[in-house]
Image 1 (cartoon, rainbow, N blue to C red):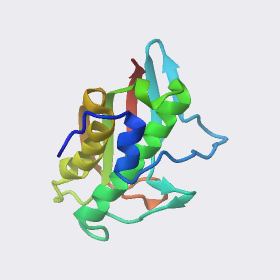
Image 2 (cartoon, one colour):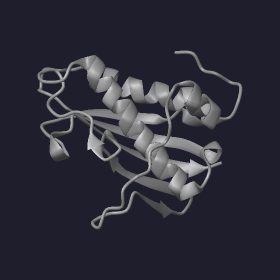
Image 3 (cartoon, rainbow, N blue to C red):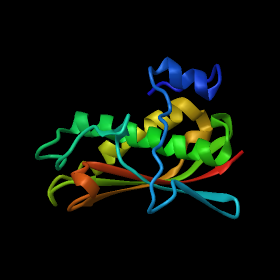
Image 4 (cartoon, helix red, strand yellow):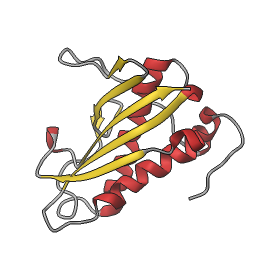
Length: 156
């Protein structure tokens, strides 16, 4: 992992060939909720332009590399929700990330799926992207998504 220290977070995101998506409104929940200084980001699936980018179980239907890319997209959606709440990517600091990986009990590589999202956050946000983290294997996720990511962020 190479952490670029030059340019803005937005510039680093673009240099990676990525952009923050526009999150669709949902009638059942909000994408972020502030409680004191903490901003809780709802679990985000790897949607891009309204399309779920993958379905299935990691280690069975979805290989590790594909799951890692899906985790990056879910992390981008979390960043988009954080920017909705804070107003500026430059002010986003990731406090905690919770990564759910749909996987069989013997998979054991959930942390490697989560590493891809962590790496993206650190590449884009630098030290503000470093976070505490939990990666959990689960039997299933909404819409049979292989990955879901939830975050707690704060503004700097």
